[in-house]
Image (cartoon, rainbow, N blue to C red; front, side, top):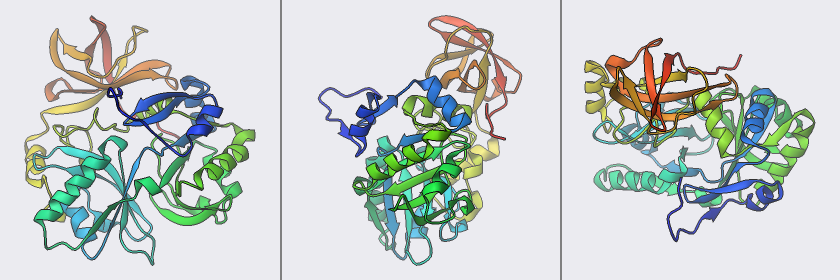
Length: 375
């Protein structure tokens, strides 16, 4: 994300550690963030083969509590939040009246003994999301809910990869390996109090860890030390993007936007039309009934003709049918791959496409996604 002229970039509590580790820093969503340390390819492969440690201090966290917290979340997001028990989490989409997506998020229900939910939102959308909930509550005066942005007091890191659980277990006060996917709990890691969630954005197993700003540095150092002997390394935003693309995980602003339906994005599984009324339900039901006019598809470039980038045109028989939403060199497949939002008639596994790369149409083939799935 380009820096706005005059914009003062924020720093996470781990900024000095990134500099000491030799990270290359870039502006991203209003923050100075590490894009790479040892290199994107090396970091990507470390996560697939061993483990990587990520600073996610730019992400947003919102506390939603009160007697009508569930009602608010079910009314403003697409999935059925009532399905999750204390200590569980669910992926959902914050929706607008037109059936588009304001943001994608994970809703964590606090464990037993605590009231409400913590919602993790995208860094660039944090203020927009809270303003949306505030606007809804200004109309729905019947709802008794406390919506509070706790991002400034909450640090977030993630450890991902096939050795991530083993490494974390070395430092954990509790048997974290027993934590189920999409659940979370309180524990101590290296004697630091944390909330540990078995979630992530890489296609690998692992954890996302939430703690205070003053404690996260100690936690970061302890994890790096504990995992160094099995290949744990710090990982920046560059490899985070190639990892999530291989796993076909959407990025807001690319596969998701306010003018893209969840059904076009291939996220119909995150929409519960039968849960009752929610914002955007009628528009989404209409798209589902008539069929989405566009679809996100995966493609693989034939040969070594260049890397597809966001917004590159997509052609069929010389006619534009859409554009690339995400593209990169896949270190796992050793090929250039991408996702594209195209007309429904052009979509289909095995069907040909042409991606216009720097003015030249390059042959590609639609393929099944995810591009990578762990064994």
